[in-house]
Length: 388
Image (cartoon, rainbow, N blue to C red; front, side, top):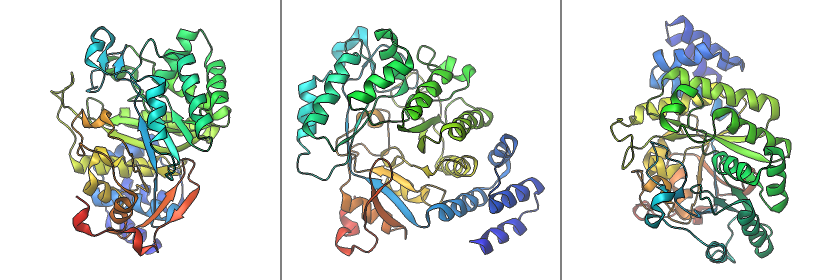
């Protein structure tokens, strides 16, 4: 790796880029200004090579995935985010769906006897689905399958729950954790900058509130993920500001597992006039996130959002995790125009996808403990023709 990065350093005449590459080689943190320079001046091959250097230093060729399934309790929501193609306002709740606790427990039971390690529960913010409702749900899930890791509720859902229950963040998080909540997904972060948030999601928890909830989870010994919605009306400085706040909290708590950039999709929402980012821009974002977020152990590409081939490509731009089997038909991205309209892949398909680009497929649990290394398991892969 050292030879390739030395070649990269000597190949550029841009002094600022040369300095950044030297810092990456020496494992020195880059500044906010240098992050913006990467966005403005680095070629895609240059940024990608730096990101891949970091990825391989941290993980070699290991590429993680997990066996998980999603439950989406409702798409009825009291909030009206302009980028959202998924939710239906409470006033028009007849256009959406609402699952009962028994219905959600039935979904869990369909995986009985299967080696699933995680259930991911997120949805709209429904006024009738309060903290007591979700506590009962988690208690019943844990009673039925104690070993299943419950990763649930965005900070947006949690903020609403806590305010409605008249609980502090600390009180609310402790009650949910005691009831069976194991970790938090990263949703609802969007872009922290107030001037952008005011335009795209003014009525839900702000950036400081999102960070407070995740910090509290970390203090309880829980791990969480972090996201950023990119490719809409934000500028490079807003992306760096967002990642800086995450980097600072990670310095403080060490509680984040992974960072997940989420591409804005413009189908059937109030921001359909905004042109989506190109795949070149997507890969540049992944690469710079890997370079900037030096204290995040993992960078994840959500493959249903990118599509399978682009998810493979991202593995050369700093990404070392492509999420999981996602054994449902999660609607949040398919309703917004994602690349994958039926986002579920078998373990064999995921293993093959990773092996096709000469990476090492490793099944993990939610906390990145290794479940199985598939790199030497020829029987796990399937013929290319069956991948599509």
